Length: 153
Image (tube, rainbow, N blue to C red; front, side, top):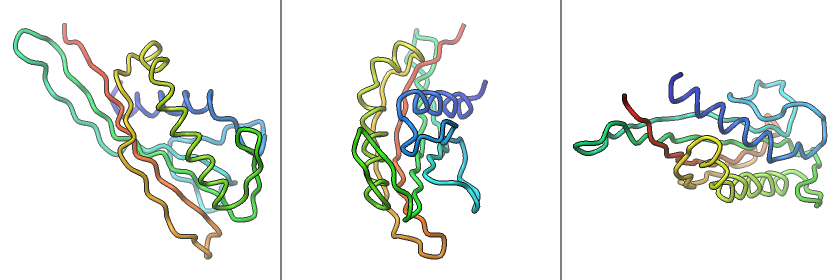
């Protein structure tokens, strides 16, 4: 399996398990792609935007892999949702979901290490987009670096 696909699956499955749908639709709302124009909101998209590998030093077999993953939160202005027991709407919901995702991934480091052998998760940066009135969308991108090792035989 290639690194990008593996990271998509790990991040998608971990977030689906740990971040409940804020409007309780009872279906998946976290996807490994950007939403279509007619997609229901809120939505979280996951895109692996780059992967790099570094060889271990002399005498060691394997690589250190770093994958940069963009996790985007998409909200329409009319949607109201609940995050950690509190109601939010529009940009407030975008921020609450963004914070929840950051906390889940950073505080989930021990579980990610145990389940998937992810050595570290780092929040690289965030990007908040201005409200898009044509699409009625609030968006926030969260960029994470996931680090793990491979072993060559």
